[in-house]
Length: 311
Image (cartoon, rainbow, N blue to C red):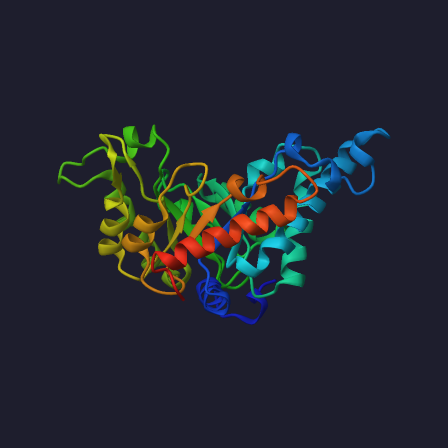
């Protein structure tokens, strides 16, 4: 999939898909084996006949493909989280089968792998081959803590042109503030410095067009729960302008706020993708699991549109 199914790069592909379905929704494909609906066990009937690890992996892939088919009309991006697939036997093969299915059935929907890798040069090069090569995805994220190598050695313009490389910048988990809100000597927050630095790396590496940042959705202000904190989104948009797109997690079960997120970060098609994972894929454990997921994806799409996120 070296040419991203005919698109020049990830962001062009994302922009085209968002315009086509007027949706900024990203569905996170993060399965938990214990939540597998019995009706999704296509061969072994709820394990009654001694389901093997390989059978279970196949059934999980079948489950996620059902979610993909049901939510596709409302989706501009699918995002499998790598650890959720690595944590059960044969999960890697299951992930690849789902990614390949999306490429074949929905060639205009990009697939982004959430892996947050960040290591030395040769290790990053191995992550590149694992995610962009073997898993065959259209983009991946990384932790920038170990420096420019974390981004530089994910780049291979000949073999994997146009891939999205997205650096962690500002996340919404509570303990993140202990690190990301550290103030530097010049008064900037560490996350502000990180936004500037990832943009600078992308410029130096010649990959700005498809590069991005992981930016948490607007959330309750930890210092005043009556207020909603979205300053990080508007501030980083000031820093990077429209040059980087934002992958925005935290909506749904993590408590993010749609209206404030859209108003602070959205600048047009291809500028943001708003992710929801468990709120969509675990919407039901019954026979209606796919329909329930579709309903939640549509609901999020409509909330985003109502907040001004029209494409």
